[in-house]
Length: 177
Ligand SMILES: CC(C)(COP(=O)(O)OP(=O)(O)OC[C@H]1O[C@@H](n2cnc3c(N)ncnc32)[C@H](O)[C@@H]1OP(=O)(O)O)[C@@H](O)C(=O)NCCC(=O)NCCS
Image 1 (cartoon, rainbow, N blue to C red):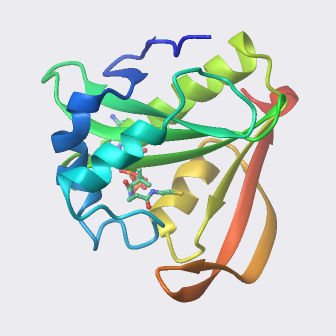
Image 2: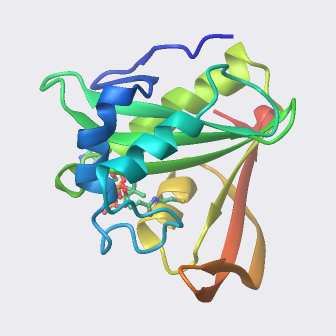
């Protein structure tokens, strides 16, 4: 299956491409904004290697796919959405935006669009997010979307050499509005 092109009011989401590398490096290398992320690239080759590993097929169990988020008005690449197809029925999402567009509702809009697609087009059963509890913007994002908190694991992930907690949020297809 090919990755869909998703269009919302202000955004367009499409499959990542090799020549997105510079735009991705520009915001993903911002170590402060991305302090809760496991992957912080330092060079263009880091991003190229990341893009190369992404499968060509969308919706394949046990893979991570990456969509990029484009602002329709400016045509600027402003972020990305990681989609972890855990198995046939369950998906994990992670959203990253360039700092200059935070607090405009773009992450909520992009997540909503992807979740709608996952439930209505791909008939997924459950969507989760795995978040460092210190990442308050991400916690607010999933709570705003109606995810339920399901678990708080203590020092369960070693991220950049440090053991950190992990909270898991989820929403089921029958709960999604
Ligand atoms: C996680 C992340 C994407 C969230 O971004 P965000 O800007 O906080 O979330 P949104 O884009 O949905 O914006 C929501 C805010 O915009 C405000 N807003 C302003 N205009 C708005 C509009 N037109 N529509 C909706 N909301 C709007 C909302 O009120 C909300 O602010 P509040 O939280 O003070 O109520 C961002 O913090 C990020 O990229 N972090 C770094 C990467 C990261 O850690 N990702 C998580 C991986 S698990």
